[in-house]
Amino acid sequence: MNLPLDDLLGHLRQPQVRDLAWALLSPPLLAAGNLPLRHPLAASIWLSEPQRLASWLLQQEASSSTLQRHLANGSSRLGHYYERLWQFALQAAPDVQLLAANLPVRRNGQTLGELDLLVRDDDGLHHLEQAFKLYLGPEHGPGELTTHWLGPASEDRLGLKLDHLEQHQLPLSSTQEARMAMAELATEKPRASAWLGGYLFYPWPDSCSAPDGNHPQHLRGHWLRLRDWQRRMVPDQHWQPLPRPAWLPPALLPTEHLWTGEQFRNWMAQLDAAAPAQLLVRLEQDAQGDWLERERLFLVNDHWPRRPPEQP
Image 1 (cartoon, rainbow, N blue to C red):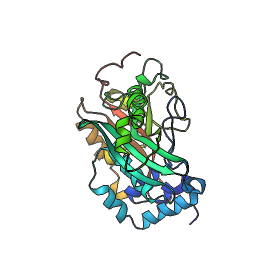
Image 2: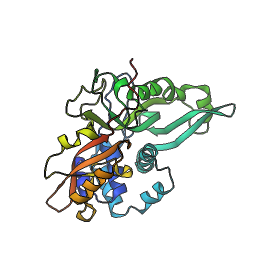
Image 3: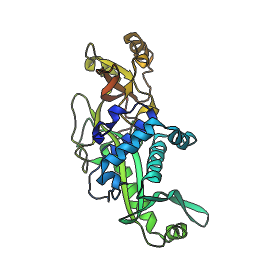
Image 4: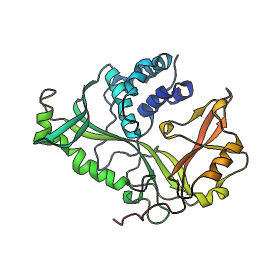
C-alpha cells in the first residue's frame, strides 16, 4: 500500500503503533535556534525514502507483539514512554546503529546524568536528548518569553527545560566522565543535539504569541479555567477527557468507547474544584464510523497556576 506519511495515522488502529507513528512523524516544538536540533532519523533512508518507513509502520500494525513486549516493562511516565518508542524505531532503522540508551555518566560513584541516546549513522556519532513536553502559554505578559510557558502542573517551564538542555544535558557528552562511559562503544566525540515533541496550549479566549524559537508547524491546543467552560462549550459538540496514556497522537475512538452526554455532564459535576489539569478532546465522527479528535484543550482549576511565573 502506497501511503503518504501524513495519512498514516488514519490507517492505524493499534494504540501503540499509532503512538509510534506519531512520535516519528509529528513536528517538533522547536525550530533550529540557540539549541542544536536534529531529527533522530535525519541521515536514515526512512526519511529520504519515506515509503520505507510507511511500510515498516504498517508491518507493526499487522503484528505489534514485538513492539508491545518492548514497551511492556518500562515506566508509565509519558516522557519515558516517548523515549522507548524512539528506541524501538532506532533499533529497527536499517542504517542507524543504536549504541546505547539512557547511558549513565558517573564521577566517583555519583551519577552526573544520562545520555538519552548514543547513535551512529552516515553522518557520524550523535548524542541525542529527547523529551515529550506539554506547555501552557501565559494569559498576561509576552508569550515570546519561554519562561512564561508552564507545564500543566505549573512546575515545569519551557525556559527552564531549554536552559537545562543547553547548560547540562547537551554538554554532558563532552566531559571526561562521558568519554569514559562511552569508551567501549565509541572513541570519537559525539555531536550533541536535542529533539522535543509535544504540544503548546494557548489561553482561551484571548490567545498569546508563540514562544521564541517555536517550530512553525508545532502542534497546538487551548487551555481555559473551569469557570469558563460553560462559555466555551458549543451545543452539539462532543467532548470527553482523554486518559494520560493516550495523550500522544490525536485520539481515535470506536463508538463503543464514546461517552454519552450524560456521562460527560456527570463527570464535570463531580470534578473537584481543585482538580489537576484535565486534557479534553473534541471528537467528530468520520465516514467509517470512528470518532476522531478535532481539538484538544486543558481544563485547569480556577486557581491555576499554583504560583505566578517567575519574571526573567
